[in-house]
Length: 578
Image (tube, rainbow, N blue to C red):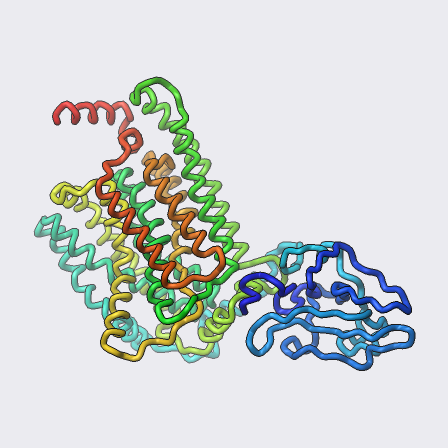
């Protein structure tokens, strides 16, 4: 599988899935056959004219040489079928001599017309997979009936409602923390203690986050691995998205912006760093799925560049010598229009990227593992088909809806207690939004990681090390940056909250550095525990420096639900009072 992941020397993955594989020796034109002469060029290939696929009759078999290839006046040829060998590595496509034009003497292509490959499929040094150039949604239509049957659990042993409830209650020891939720509600409505309410809500959200993860994992049994990953990512972002929506509703725009950046940093650095540390502690290196990893690098880059454009635009403005002349309602109105347009473009980028990942070009590729996917991904899909789920699909949907409802109430109480807690603790607003609030979503994963180390310390039998790294947190950052951030901007436009994509320069700088580091670490689609420690270390560097950072005043003055002029007057009055 190394050759498949690194993308070198394997021609077309899985042995001519959409055309014959090439050795990529650099010739850009097909060679014509001359009778009586033996050709030894490696890309003198032929494939079927009536199909986009060139699969041989036995795609998993070893390469076979036929003695019947030798004909009168023509040198014999060896026909090679590329595919996965027993070890899972990609075989080289070999071709020596010329292929007999007599169909009766070529068992691999019996009774089929042969023609040279098109110019588009040869002459390139880059490894690629040739697919149909025509994009359609027929793959979705063909997949839909099977997906619906799988979702209903047809011909499958599924648990009862009672068993589903029991499995949910015992899915994690973190569920005992659910007892804090009624106490948090009582503290908010009756005891009126903001500090206690914040602490209880913080603890109560931890098991809710774990239930989202459990529900998303169980949905994978009914919708498959590919679509299940999207469900899990969306569910794991629900806590942060709910907090962000409530902050927007309460018009805490400055804390909201800091929380958006904090969530992205948490998912880019702390979560994957912890996963690489725990997963790679007993193995030399782990592999990442190269297909989404390469796309994620581009998506993260365009996400931070979208924020960098308004920031650099604001820094380049020259409307006078004083900050008051630059910070105005007119300037904010200009950035609002700019932000609305950028938000729409970001949403389109995210939607098209999901279509590319889950319904790539070609027939029959919808919701299937991408070409060149590691063996572990195919094994995971097989496991989801064979294993018995712990809950039914209907129960899982009801569980997720109920969890969202409880989370919405609890998160709103937490947000309402923020101001009092921040003032009593003397915490900088920037650190509160950038570090403390996003940590809520990490609490469940952090608790699981701690329990993992406790098990190891008690000399219990650990799980075997996985060779496929868990980098789902990076996908969480991609979704939050390209979907939830523009969604919040457009939602603010709808409800009259002036959320703009003009971020604090410090926040943009550290996010840009985090994306650069993550892209560098995952560039080779491999990782190890040392690189995981680097990601965690950089996150703590940011947390340390943010503790002393007061925030950029000019940006904060433009992030309020009143007029900018009123904000300037209040800021001046506060300065005089001090």
